[in-house]
View 1 (spheres, one colour):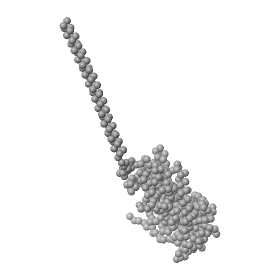
View 2: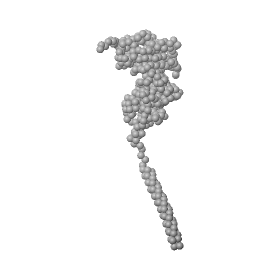
View 3: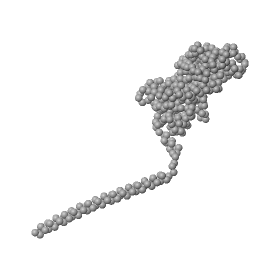
View 4: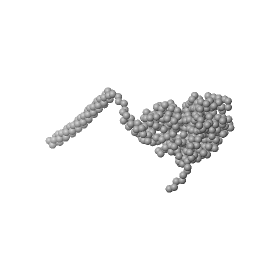
Length: 429
């Protein structure tokens, strides 16, 4: 009986200990959870306090504009090859190619790229860093309808931001990605130029008027008076006849093909291989009347051209049409003889197309690159040409009589004089 009571008491003790143990575990667990909750609350409170303090510091801090170094780092991005197709009126510029200290098309374009944060100041100062290259150079005063430059630019480049910083006489009409090795100059197959001139400069002159004493100085006022009337009518009323137009195209065709054009540029020797140039075609593509004066549009396409080459070719054609020289002079100008050919005014000349036929055939259909033909913006380009470039040629010709004064002072028989004969030598190694 006693033992039974001991057993009952022992069981009760074990049960009470077990219950106590469970209570302790439950208590400790709850305490731990409570402590963790308190710690989390404290931590969140501290973080919130830090955020609030940081926000207060930021809001109270003065606003700081990004420094030049920050801008430079922003522009230090991965660059890819692009081409920019642009048009410009050349009358207010000293040519296309950059010439520090002078107003040029490239200087204006690069300045716009810099202001739009597409190039850095270092790249503006040294364009070799972005592999800048032009498809063709244009002389002082010469315009371009579709000029192309290649360079490295960031992916986010766009024409709108560039045009924002360009003067109104320069417009970017398209920007396209090209292959990694593309170069706008070396990959160009051919270039097409146009020369717009009033047709009265093609009117034949009386041979008696052209007879000038070698010792006699040309009287410009007297010559202007002679030139102001053609067949008894004011010069601006002159119109090309169909026969004159046919003769003009016959003369232009004589200059087609591969020839030695050393007489059509400066500082190029007759035996210099660089004087050999290929003219694909040369023709009159259009005549039109503006302000009661007739104009002709001469179009010439060639692989490449030298400095002043086209303007001297136009000058020679005018000289033949006016009977100042005969068409026989063609064989002489392509020989090693040195002949002085006057330079026609730059006003009527404009670069119209740069051709990338081989590139378009090889890469324009690969699914990654676009053809360089600009068909998608032709309407806008043609509008700029007619309203800005062509209209400027017409207005300036009529108001300033550019070609009339050139005929009176420059294009005379004295200017087509033989200078010297260059003896062709054989080099012995």
